[in-house]
Image (tube, rainbow, N blue to C red; front, side, top):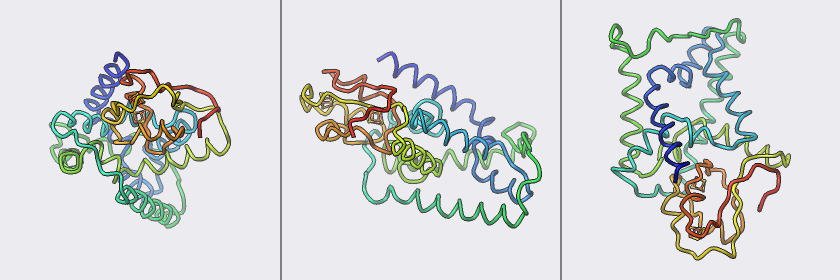
Length: 245
Ligand code: SF4
Ligand code: SF4
């Protein structure tokens, strides 16, 4: 279980840094920067995330994301699995609208003319500028409410616009058979206890994935909780291009 403790410790640390890092993650600031012809660090971050996911899958979500951290802390209050129905498509719709709006904004501004590393960071949460609190706590309350209402990591499941970028990157990696971090399972060792399902923060039916011999799922964030909780050591995490699927 040591890996999960380290993972959760890093997530909590990342959550504590959010008042600073949110200005390097915010899709809203990407849009505001684009309007002024400025390339912002948050957009550069999306490119880096896309490249990183190609090899490492969605480890950003499981090890670093501050929104993921808040949601996992809320497991103590509501640990019910989020529904994995059609509603998970909502994030692709939001993402599509955002991408189109961004491209139009960049086009209208005539492209990027500069790179601003500190774009609007003065609007951060600080005692000298309380207005920054509204953005920060607005996002927190939204994620908080969604988790309490719909269950485990529901913001990741239904809303997060970073997810489609990672799903596309992972899809490219699979198509090109690139070496990548992934799960593998020894189906014959499984006793169908479903402990893996109970521990999956993304509410995936890991037991069925094992039984079907297909451990590739675009919503798997490679947290390793199923690997660490399985009493029969059925699941393992490997870095290679060889896949079950
Ligand atoms: S399937 Fe396993 S590694 Fe993937 S999100 Fe669920 S618990 Fe984490
Ligand atoms: S925890 Fe392990 S043994 Fe139990 S259902 Fe999952 S893969 Fe099978």
